[in-house]
Amino acid sequence: MSLAGSDAILARMMALHPRIIDLTLDRVWRLLAALGNPQEALPPVVHIAGTNGKGSTLAMIRAGLEAEGARVHAYTSPHLARFHERIRLAGELIAEDHLTALLDECYAANDGAPITYFEITTCAALLAMARMPADHTLLEVGLGGRLDATNVIARPALTVITPVSMDHEGYLGDTLAKIAGEKAGIMKRGVPCVTGPQQEAAMEVIEAQAARLGAPLLAHGQHWHAWEERGRLIYQDDSGLRDLPLPNLPGAHQIDNAGAALAALRALGRGEPAFEGAVTRAHWPARMQRLREGPIPEAAPQAEIWLDGGHNPAAGLALAQHLGTLPPRHTHLICGMLNTKDIAGYLTPLAAQAQSLTAVSIPGEAATLPAEATARAARAVGLTAQTAETALAAVRQIAAQAPRARILICGSLYLAGGILRENG
Image (cartoon, rainbow, N blue to C red):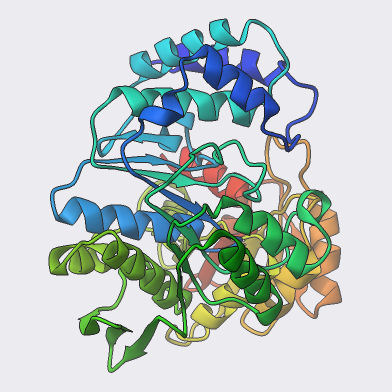
């Protein structure tokens, strides 16, 4: 099916505001009022903020709820291959004709007033979710929390704050405490909040906000614990200890994400099938995703090819730690990043795990860091680096020298989305 209908409307929406990001809720409240305040008619909401792990944690909560037969709405961003990925209604991605009609309705209701792309499309998602019956709504924050367009739910069933680290400093603040304050802005009076592992400066802010609001905290290391033991995930809270399979999403950091998801499911009153489903059924693309079919793997048939969209220092560290647990194999990075990211912070931990880096510019992204700039940054942290015109060319370049290499394409969700589209 052609996506021209929704694509054309989305392109028009991009022109409604001169800035991509402009954090305030005024425009969102105005449009929601024009649409009849759909945010007031949503199924019970779980609102998820944080710097790293939001999407994976949401995916595991959704998998757990669906394992018990629940119908679940989910709103995530950004999308990878196509916009429809952002809106999941009662378990299914929104259909093209439904999306087109919805976007048309929101565009008309906005009546040409200034509003950002994320704000108007978030309103469209809330409208769709309010109109379709479901048991739960999962909302992932786009940026920050306090002034994010998703922060319009007066009383969610639960809030979740995954690990907070430095990212988007130009919008959220230049200290961990300031960033944590923005993330903690999703907390609501009297509403329980699950928190993943936090650095001390972030946790102090979250705890202070919880105290002000009388919001019960379910905090990692205090109220719940999760760890790996003998190839199993062990989860413990005040209800007891559970011995579960390891998460099917790879990486040691997914233990903590799974723990937060399990704590959320427990807070929602879910039982054993949900716990099992959360760790065995979750799917979240471009998080250490193995590429096995398509033009990119075919260009290096003996290689092991992975794709990851993490893009900040915490993600780089988690990725490096995971690479360190894999069977020994020469590892080569293909990296493209945005010019707003801390590239040195991202690449420094990865330098110890890789033999080389091939830098690419991200196709179609005005904010891409040029490939040569990425290569210079890689050399500065000790990596052998070169450039390539495209990721596919980089794969061929690496495979010609090291046919059985482990190749990791990384550095940006925007690069990852292009890879998934290109790879079919």
